[in-house]
Length: 344
Picture 1 (cartoon, rainbow, N blue to C red):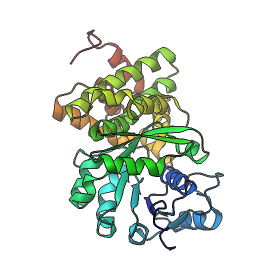
Picture 2: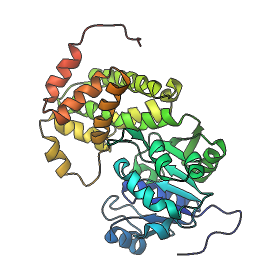
Picture 3: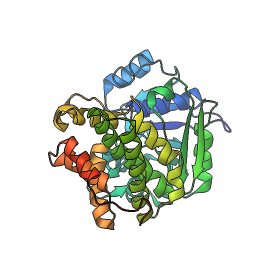
Picture 4: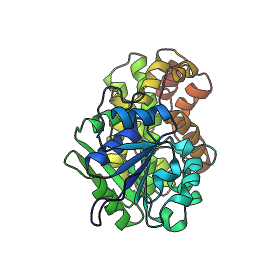
């Protein structure tokens, strides 16, 4: 591994995860001048990144920055890094970061770019990191979310995200690390709001996909997105998040992208469910994780724990795990008792 950059230069960076999102962020940071090492379990992925400057599994045909390096050795990847970016699936963060924790520098800033809720504990990524990282490191942790398809980030297309942290200085450091002429980063103090927006939009995206798979129109999609946002806000506020955050990039911005964009994995799952395929059939054909499936389990349980009414989440849960046909789920939503649009 090459030496750290000279004093005053960008911090050496580790990116944990070389799926499409992790690879895109690693490429972006390398393009911005960082010395980046990406960690992956797969030796084939590591070889593809190091030898051919491509991710042969997840970002086929897209050239990666030539200075980006990859490794299968997690401990070596994070050792000495001043910026550690976690971009693997949400359900793996506890095990991976617990393994990495002894090797993370005590002055490092950890950035979670994973969007989800741990199903076994119903903890957010911030709460999981609080469990496994030293308190000082966890207290500086940052959480990156917003409308950002990996392929478009690799291509350098304009992207804007939010980086939330309870430590304002850490948020500014992460902001500076990610900011370029094609990638704009805003800061926020509302960690819970940013995390809940990033996680729950995937559930709503599956519902929006079902609408498309059933052959319904733009009216239904717009209504679904709007009412889905209302559910996200209700649960986020109950968990301590702020409604205003959900009107921004990590809320409505990411929700619109994931519900309407053709590159959305979660929307794809919904489309196929709307066409009548089973969840098992759909997931068997996918190489990448659709975070919304497990997030639906967690959101459904959180809503009950917090006493929050989330009818869209309820119906998506029924389609995914209770064999309810998508058409019946939509009918159930339409036949609910009329009420005021704004209510608590």
